[in-house]
Image (cartoon, rainbow, N blue to C red; front, side, top):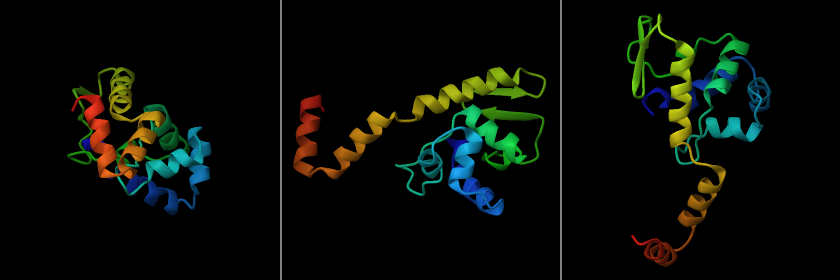
Length: 138
């Protein structure tokens, strides 16, 4: 996700600059502290991303511009923001575009069950992984 490549670092920097704990951010966004910790994870395999409403809650409640958290090609270009699979100008319906962005984030984000299966798969022996892949038909 091109727009969220440095999100984890930017969020941590903003949180620390504002003297906020992960629990404080969690309360602002209406999520568990563990979720905020996963947003800031340095290991991309363990990192998750907030949904649009959580991201906007953080921005509104901390008075942080959204573009400070996203990787935009041209900072300060307010005329047009390109998002995965769409582009809109300030005259278009922003709520529709944000909904599409949230759907894209949800599409690529692993469920808790999928993440647990992946963690277990990675921790098992090479022989067990080979057998699992054989069972799955790969």
